[in-house]
Image (cartoon, helix red, strand yellow):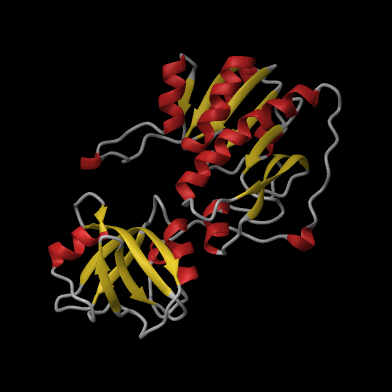
Length: 309
């Protein structure tokens, strides 16, 4: 089958490689090079890098819906367009181009968590029972008919970055399964609009940790905001000290929210609005992540000091 692939971040790589190995992958379209590297240098997207390594025609485009990118896609005459986390809404000119339409992998149990950050928002909400979906794209965001859906347990010990990688690996064989059945008239089912929820992109404020909140909620937030914007907490000193919290665990206990109850090799115990959060790994601005006790020692933290609550 002649396939054109649209994708940008790491989650798209397993499907890209699976298509390259099993179908006639005509071309790849991805978002333009961006400032992803330290020092402000521009780099191609992960999909752009992978396509080049595979020797596949690759286009870095602001939009596939008009101009030269659309004209090139029309020339390629794909049987199907496969989309994984591309980052652009497709318009009618693209949606109607391939005879089998445009297929999208979405890491949620649609119609739950339509939008750009389904895994991150589900982790924020404490979801463990989710799903993975292959659907046909329509003009309305993530609203197309479902071709294949599987249950997916989101490990509560994994962060969003780890879960996205897991979802990407699981989505590749699902997409191949759907492509194998397209010629035989694969049945689709419409989404239940009464069950729709949304997953907008994360913002920097989503990473803010306030210890007046329950420890479980804070733990989910720490997991959800990896790798961006990362969880930040403030030690109440003069001046205050900002730390990034990379890993933590929930423990039983109580106390004045934000108060440091103990510092040991096992981490820093901080009282929350409900329960205790043990901080395991922290990061200071411009420094690599380190065990929490090492950071505490460097800052000369003492029990009784407080994080912003």
